[in-house]
Each structure stands twice: as structure tokens, then as C-alpha cells.
Image 1 (tube, one colour):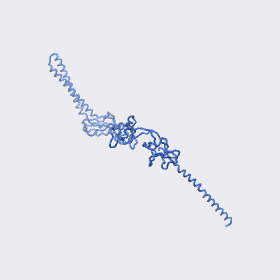
Image 2: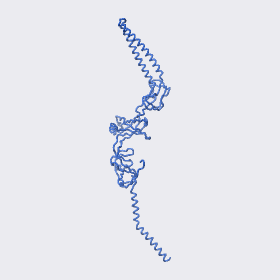
Image 3: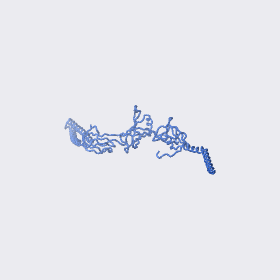
Image 4: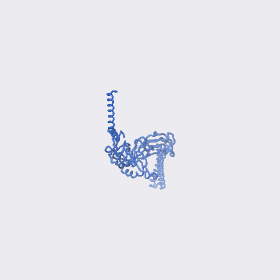
Length: 378
């Protein structure tokens, strides 16, 4: 190796050594800056927030209720005869006064004709008795007859009048019996399937009704509430604030009405009182006999509400994360009840605070946060 080549290699080795020493000497400067930046980014948590609102919130009591008709009529025959015609379709809606069944009335028609003939004969006999009475009354004034004949004529006239009255009552009764052969709807509603068809023999002693009509609008919804609610409910009923909403499970269809009555006793075994709500049910959403979810609104009150997902639980109680000056702060709260995904706060919030609704698992008291917009529909 020549002397020049040796000198060049020595200079190259020396340069590499100097660069390595310089890099090692400054390692704390560039590694420290990167670590600080990463730590700064790690301490900022992206969260979703919502506002605590102060608004009117209803005080509700939820229960399970049963739909019952206000009026239900079981149709039965009042005469012994046969079915001549059925004038409705099974399950149809009927109005009060609609003709439903026609019964055989031929026997009653014959009895009416007989009674009318007897009544005509009795009226003829009465006319004859009244003529005799008039004649004897004129003769007694002339001394041409005795008082006995006058009295007998008077008795005959009275008997004829009494017979007419009795036969008239018999005829009226037969006409009433004939009216029973036309069975009409006593109420408006929806009728069941007919238990008899044309040609069947029916009588008043039959246990099975011909059909049943249930009133569909309005209807009752009967449910039970705890006895502690009774006092507030009675006060609300006096000023017309209470209401009842009945919802069919699984369908979301509902009807709203008023509280019609509260049972006058509380069941001592359960501590529950029976309440009956009255629903208009014009669209026949509620069907007699079905179970519904009922919501009794006793009153409305001003309260602070937050989304229920913002409320966290710990060993010391409920709390929410309140965002203030870009940092999350733990705020203990007292929750009185929930309402449609919202929690009603008794103490801890005044309203208009920003609370965290998503991202709480990454937060501690004082963690820096970066709010992000809530998802649509949240």
C-alpha cells in the first residue's frame, strides 16, 4: 500500500468516527422532542358532546294494561222460533238500529189477527151495551122501566169496556212479541261471527248468544299504578292535566286519552290501584282484549335533562364528564328518572353544560378533549 492511500483511509475513518460521536452526543435532543410530541397527542381525546337542557318534562308511570269495550251486548232471542234471515257479515261494523236477524213471525201474526178480531167483537158489544143503557135511562125518567134494568145495562156496558181494555193490552203484548222477531243492533260497534244461521231454532233459554257486539270507539284501557302515585294523580285529574297513552307492543301504534276513573280501593296484597283510561280509538287501533304498554302522565315539570348515555356509574354514585375550557371534569349528579332516552337530573347540573356522550372510557378528571360532531340520529 502506498503512503497516499494509507493517508486517505485514515482520514475516512476519522471522519466516520467524528460523525458517530456527534450523533451520539445530540441523541437526547431529537429523541426528547419526538417523545414530547407523542405524549402531547396522546393526552388529547376526541369525544362527542351534548348540551344539558332545562325544559318541561312529563312525570310518567309505565304499566301493562288491557283494552276493554265500554259497552258489550250479547244478542239473544226473546221468542221461541226459527231464524229466517241473517243481515250482516261476520265481524262487520254495525250501527245502532241496523237489522241483524229476522225471525219467523207467522205464529205471532196469527195471534195478532185473532186478538184484533176479538177486539172488534168487544167494541160491537160495548156499542150495544151503551145503547141499552141510554134507552133504559130515558125510560126510567118516564117511569116505563125499573131501576134494576138501568143498573144491569150499566154493568153490561162497564164489562164490555173492561173486556176491550184487556184485549187491547193482549194485542199490544203480541205486537211487542212480534217486534222481537226483528233483532236490531242496540249499540254501534263491531259484531262477532253469528253462532246461528238461517233455519236454526232459537229460544230465550239458549246459553250461547246469537252474536256479540263490542263498542270499538271509544274503549277503556285498564291498568294498575302504585299507591304512592294516587295523591298526585287525583290532584292532576282535578285540573285536567293527566293523560294516558296506550301503545301496542311491537307495532309502535298508540292512542292517547284521558283518565276516566280510579278504583275506590287499593289492593292490599300488591299496593296497586286500578286506573281506567278512556281512548277515542276512532281508527280502531286498540282491539278489545289485547295487552298494551300504558304510560300515565301525571304532570309536567321543569327539569334538567341529559342523554342517558352520558351518565356514568361508580362506587360513589352517578357522574358525568363536563367539558370546560377544553378539559373533561368529573361532575357528580343525582338521577331521578329516565324519559325516552333522557335522564332527568335532580342535582349536579344547572343546564346548558356540555357533557360527554361518547369516549368516556379514555377520560379521567382533567383530560384534554377535542369535541367532534355527533352522528346523525344520535
